[in-house]
Image (cartoon, rainbow, N blue to C red):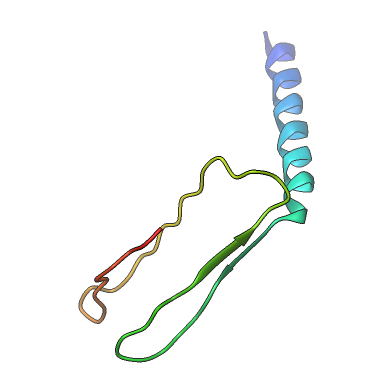
Length: 71
């Protein structure tokens, strides 16, 4: 049983490493801005079709209000 877990762990690690090497051709850029009303651009490029993407942003709501999010 322990040998099966080891082989499974090695296979998962190999898949994760292969995925990270494959993803090196992609890019994600999140802009930075200052001011009272700003638009923060998020730009993503890929050689392949993108099936899904999640962007999570944490803000201090005592200092900042998010009024609009557009896709």
